[in-house]
Length: 110
Image (cartoon, rainbow, N blue to C red):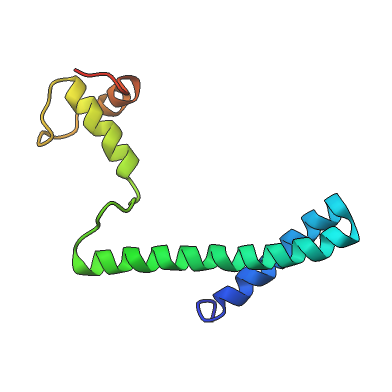
């Protein structure tokens, strides 16, 4: 149900948020303007999020992820820098302290 009505929910949420902010800042004129802008913005946000989710789903189904962010990418990058700082190759396993070394050696070479 939510997936089929996502644009309506996004628009409705945007109307409420926009109208509230508009009324608080500009009074009655802000109420109308904020409601309109909030509706348009809410729908665009939902549309953008839906497209990103669909692209991610397609990449997972085809086995290619491309350059899309996946949960854990940042952590894996920090651990990789930590391994490099202790002189380990990327194939070696994690050792205690790799994450901390990666945090503190950010931007530095070996």
